[in-house]
Image 1 (cartoon, rainbow, N blue to C red):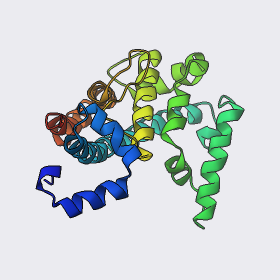
Image 2 (cartoon, one colour):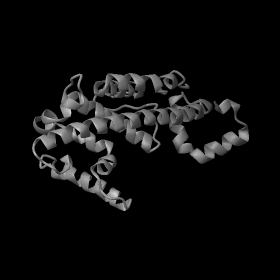
Image 3 (tube, one colour):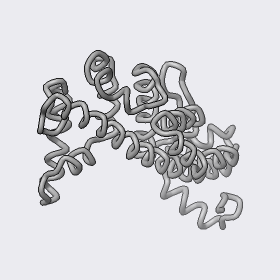
Image 4 (cartoon, rainbow, N blue to C red):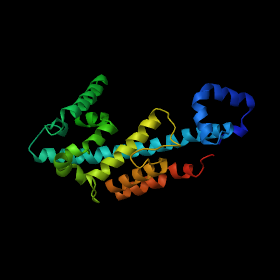
Length: 225
């Protein structure tokens, strides 16, 4: 594993120019002004961001499938043959997200299927379906059954909000070493813990598997500075 101390002066200088002094300054400041440790923290931030994004990806697929299954069952039980996302209970502002997802399927020049549309819905969309405005409708009728171990909409929505914030930071290559999200200013370790707990609520077996393969906890122990 490469560290700043193992790099030649020429390579280190080239990396610092490529990364940019403004970006690296924040990492050095997090290490008490030590520029070499700051560069190591930058390397570590990239590795743990990749590990966190991997876990978020696994959770997102499981979340999507669990919610889709319950929403489809509920919608069919009402006698509807159309996909659940055409339900009048989905608010117009969120139907815009469905329209975007359908547009992406069309751009791929493949026939539109329910599975393909659902696959294009974002993590943020699923988070919104757990918001307070759906408490008495979609949550009570369908989504609560996606968590067979039992939970509250408020808890799941808060966790999805935190995980989505982490997802956005990782996707935009922003620092996660000083992550502070939510009212409690949760750090990376806490948000990742919520991720694993959410996976466990969807399926105990899935949650245990994800915890066993995740690289995040081991990388947390290797944080420089």
